[in-house]
Length: 358
Image 1: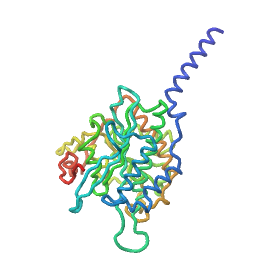
Image 2 (image 1 turned 90 degrees about the vertical axis):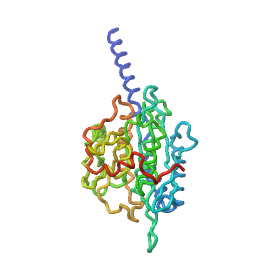
Image 3 (image 1 turned 45 degrees about the vertical axis):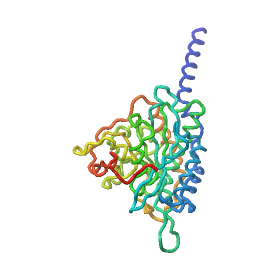
């Protein structure tokens, strides 16, 4: 009887340890609901934002709204920062334009790892309005890229709540809404050249780009740019399988999409132009876009996004983020021979002359 009781107590002790270690996944607060995802997209991509083109009142309004939402979901400004903004200026078509990255964070829970970072990003700007014509003239940009912003916010919301319950991720989490992506990745390039954290402590960047549709590819299918360039795909594959998602190959291999989104300034921080390789931060973009015709079209409206699929994606990507934040090893480059990257290398090194501190 005594040995049976002892064995039972040991079993209970091990069970309690396991429950405590995995409670963030089993007992954590719910992910953002489809209704919440829809609300965020409807606001950010609503007509009142006028297409969020940098230099317009709509883009400024979008940045203010995003900062307010960061505060609501529990993200904090970076230590020492007075607000959520990183302002800068850039020149576009001969005009100096002011813009603001929107930045929030969740402090890590492990004293040994809290100075290391997992960065979740998505650009919040779009291309504005048509200058002539009739009918719908606003490029609302619901999928491009209010959808990515909403998923990034959902990840931040859940991890922030867990952090407040004492179950937060070990590494710190950085959530950023990039400005001026549409004019040439200006927001992400500015941060890469003027970082507000130690970039040598940045483990990985997960960039979300057009994740609001599942029309062509089907529901619960996700792909990432540069899949074979780092071992990040191994972590993602583990969680897509667990959540019933399919991790598919890039449907558009000839479009060189790895170097066409906000991940690229970080991947190419230290680059070898001659060998055409990148040695910077492993950084990849994730998408569910399958070639639907709403890209840069006025019918990229909030009523077309799949909020159910977005909510499921947020749940899966939260687990990916948490895994990356808690595991011992960093993401590592594997084969990273980028055929076209060298045309961007100068800008990523800070040679661009058309961006200034505002």
